[in-house]
Length: 124
Image 1 (spheres, rainbow, N blue to C red):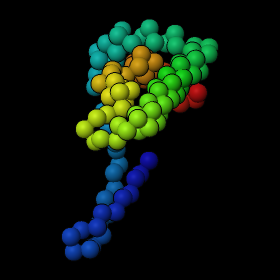
Image 2: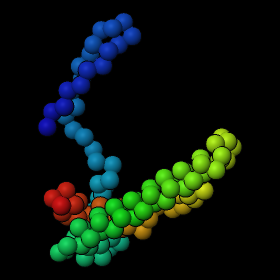
Image 3: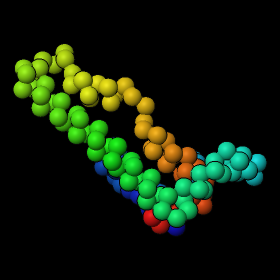
Image 4: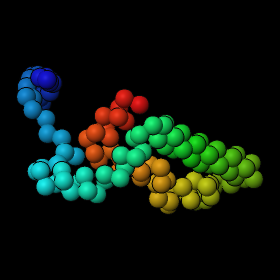
């Protein structure tokens, strides 16, 4: 695939460069690193079998929906009770900002480390 992009210079003159090859930063650099990834993330293939991807995405969707619902609910209550002061924050929003990503997102990240899993994720 040949990609052409235009950049406008300081004087307004446009330049065109052709990119003939793009490197995947996630791709393994050697056979041993591919084997290491296979060894480390091979168990995630179970998720890509059957309805695993669908169930994983549904779990992530439910988690995000519930989190957003709590943030919106507390925001309404917070503003209704006169908590419009900028120094104070919505407690659910503050808790969300400090928390780690949900386990479903972490599992999705690990699933995407293997090339065969990425193909199945795109097809899903």
